[in-house]
Length: 217
Image 1 (spheres, rainbow, N blue to C red):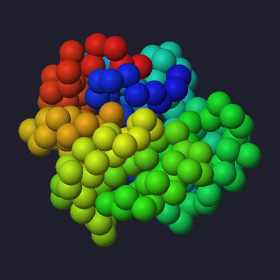
Image 2 (cartoon, rainbow, N blue to C red):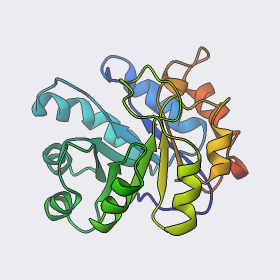
Image 3 (cartoon, rainbow, N blue to C red):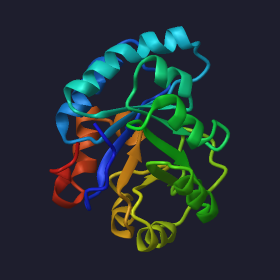
Image 4 (cartoon, rainbow, N blue to C red):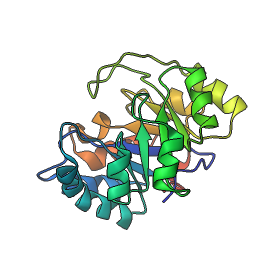
């Protein structure tokens, strides 16, 4: 379960903040609908013990579907639950520190906003992927940085490290990011808030990917 560039664009699901209740069933529905490469566990204002409890069934579902389970922000939680990796914001620690803590096989991603400099720094620090965005307005989190598709084209022209596009991505607007060279589309609301349910959301996004993401995972 690794996040590798396969010369096709793949789906990277980000959890809603509320992953209790029936969410495990909704995740199962989403992952069964079409290939997904990774799932990011993103909760806020929850202590580590509770976060680990919430993560356990979701991690098992991801493992059953060969989907990488990535913890948002928290290196210590990622180590505790033996997650496949961690995604770091600019204030969440150094990729080198994450590598020391989580080991050589961990998948380490770094938010780089709209900054070429931050992305190059992340690559030099040993990140496994860089994330650019937000590309579109989003309700998932406050947007302080807006990125343009050109940064994906620039990155792909110079570097082999995979890049993730994030921020307000839907089946209607994601095509231009695929065309610009995104290796992954990171999506949340387009799946979890889809009016016909998570499976329909995943299928709609998979339909805009080359080969419908047939090689993802």
